[in-house]
Amino acid sequence: MKESVESLAQELKVASGQELADLYITNLQILDVFTETVFPGSMVIKNGKIVAINPTWEVQAESVFDAGGRFAVPGFMDAHVHIEPTLLTPQALASVIVPWGTTAMFVDAMEIANVAGLPGLEALLNNTDELPYRIYLEVSSRVPTAPGLETTGGVLGLKEVKELLKLEISVSLGELDPSKILGIKEEYLAKVLSARASGKIANGHAIGLNWDQLNVYAAAGLSDDHESVTYEELFERLRLGIKALIREGSTERNVEALVKGVIENKLSTENLMFCTDDKHVIDIAREGHISYNIQKSIDLGMEPIQAIKMATVNIAKHFRLDHLIGALTPGRYADLVLLDSLQEIKPIYVFKSGKLVAEHGKIKHKTIDEVFPDFLNSTINLSPEFKPLDFVISATGKSAKVQVINLYPDQIINFGTQEWLKITEGEVKPEIEEDILKLAVVERYGQDGRVGVTFVRGFNLRSGALASSVSHDHHNIVIVGTNDHDMYVAAQEIARNQGGLVAVQDGQVMGVLPLPIGGLMSPLSAEEVMKQLNVLNEVATNLGCNLPAPFMTLSFISLPTVPQLGLTDHGLIDVLGHKVIPSILEIK
Image (cartoon, rainbow, N blue to C red; front, top):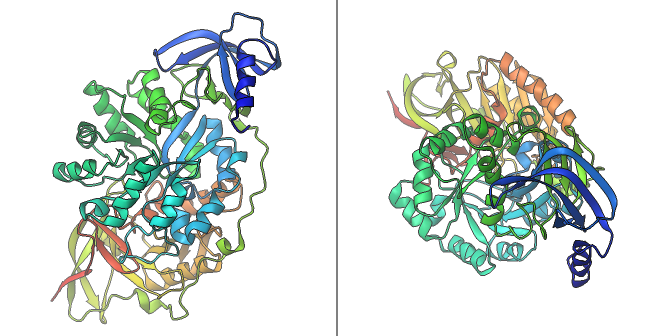
């Protein structure tokens, strides 16, 4: 119900026992995030809001729910997430995240915007009111992420950002990477000022910054950062007034190191929050969503109330929404999770706006048909000139010193090394036994047909190729492989499916998960997507890859904003230098 004087008057009448409530939840143990206490109680709900706690008058309600003495905690929130890398549509995603207690997502939809601009973003956010969880928009600040260093299908300029910031669903300017601030680029500074003028914060992405650079970043008004890998990085950000989001995604496993540091140093959790950033559906279903961050923190020794606050009221305060969400008190939405224990974050019942949306790990919300516009189903247009020879790195001589991107376990950051590789018949060849493979990014928007090629270590493929049309943030086709032919077949298979994840061996497609919606998402259910992704991961393992989430890792290796190196269709990127650099350094 849209807020009005009439609806508020109705809620106040219910709160004073003058009118019938919609729902009365009894027999609760209520966690109060303000006094950090738990007390026995009941809740009166009207128009989706809590209007009274423990009333002394006899409550009359259309429905009564006996909570059986369970603990009531606020619904969990994800402070920063990109929906598209889950591989699901917002509706399909509900069946996975809501049973884990997530009732609000703070979404930066830069992925679909980079593919299809404002129309793509609008299509993704269509019918959000019908979802069993809330979506708040972090207005994408960098579409494209690296102008001049990548090819994208869409652009969000200052005009579009200003209009999006006016929307009620918008709560912030989305993550802004350091190059835009340290380079003092006026378009992006204007976007930050637009957020301020709208009474909204600006999200950060302060990866790889030293103390002096962080000073500049903080001076620009960036409010938070989700890229801390060590406790020291987290502490520096807090000291400069930049709030820290502790992330746990599929490939960005930061909770253990950061929470251990917080506990060991007895650091206040007041300015700490949880997020996932990017997490495949299969990992959410297996281990949990934000519930995993909370549980992991408790297992590490954090007090349950502190961990729960990092997933609820801390986030609500940060985004200036604590008058609506984040606590179980009158006037706020009745978004709550019922638990048997505060030590075990296993939701039994989940409510959104006073409606039961999940029960015993199963979604109860009735699904709606999601219809995406036709243009989002035809976003991959490879150049007619594209051929296997585009993957060749030519050189004359016997050997070449090349740049190699090296993976860190459980992180999206990487480091570069320089390695000598053999030159055979005019080509620099990968060293499969040394785990130095070819990495390529193929432009997929039908604009210029560029193909960037370099080398990478960390995938451990012994044969074949893996490819994905999910490649941050430009979302061209990224491919890792042992040979050019399999890489070419993989790219063509992605084009045939208008997007997807693909595994190829000896010229044969061994597995594919089609992602035809913007080349990013599947129209299928979460269960079907997980089934296909499991098959693909098994194929990748059979090809020699030992990464826990190989396709998520592949999607980040092309990111031109995560140090040290990235690869786009324009070539190898020096991330901190923000420029294209050669893959070959020396020949002898």
